[in-house]
Amino acid sequence: MPQVSGAQEPLEKLRQLFLGFQIDAVGPEAASLIERGVAAREILETCRGCMAEIGKAFEEGIYYLPELVVAGEMFKRVSEQIRPALAAGAGGGAGRIVLGTPKGDIHHLGKDIFRMLAEAAGFEVFDLGVDVAPHVFVDKVAETGAQILGMSALITAAFDPMKEVLRLLEERGLRSRVRVILGGGVTTKDMARKLGADAQTVDAYEGLRIVQSLLLRAEVVA
Ligand code: B12
Image 1: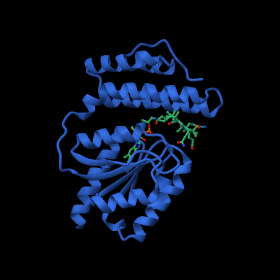
Image 2: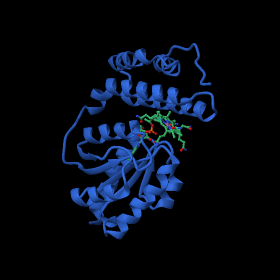
Image 3: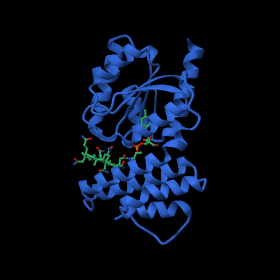
């Protein structure tokens, strides 16, 4: 079971509330941390770490689906509090991103975080939601002329649909004009390479940096 300690540094209290499933307390605590100047990124990382611990306990049969559901709700409440801090600096015209969670997977919290950050950095994001069929991703890339396609995967069942997206992009002659980035807890650099994606990350901030640099490189090549 996740360990809850007695330490009290700023983020430790949030961690304890999260791991203690204090659903009504996590939002206010996140708001208070923001007010005290703690970076949104640190708050996010703390909660993501808690989610991973809860996920591990689920895997080990210590927790069940209801705990995952509550964890998802707690993360949503924290996100709502830090949204204004993430959205600071919104601009426009940075580029277009098609984003979604592939077929078979309904997790969306991490995808939503990446979307918030990308929009804040001036990207136009076409968020297709969850359980998205391969051809829907590809149609949207064709329709919008997006330079980036982002897919978020939290379960291994999403691998085959992602592979199919890459195959369809090739088949329809779109692969050379769109950069593909994978994110989400279950993705790895190795699997991204095997699928033929351009990049992978489990950190939304790093994802944003990668997307910006992929676009710069695309401009140089064009
Ligand atoms: C919350 C949760 C749920 C919630 C989801 C709530 C929601 N609205 O999204 C609910 C209860 C619905 C759920 C359901 C299930 N879940 Co679940 N879930 C989790 C849990 C605990 C947290 C996931 C999460 O939101 N993490 C927090 C976010 C912020 O992290 P993240 O997604 O990695 O995102 C970050 C980065 O990766 C990045 N990012 C994310 N996407 C993208 C995209 C791009 C383009 C970029 C650049 C960056 C980026 O940005 C984020 C911030 O840095 C994980 C455990 C874990 N270790 O993650 C299990 C976990 C993912 N679930 C799991 C399972 C098995 C299931 C179920 C099958 C359970 C069941 N028996 O029904 C179902 C799946 C149903 C389906 N078809 O999808 C397994 C998957 C195992 C596997 N390898 O396949 C996990 C790993 C738990 C485990 N250890 O067993 N789950």
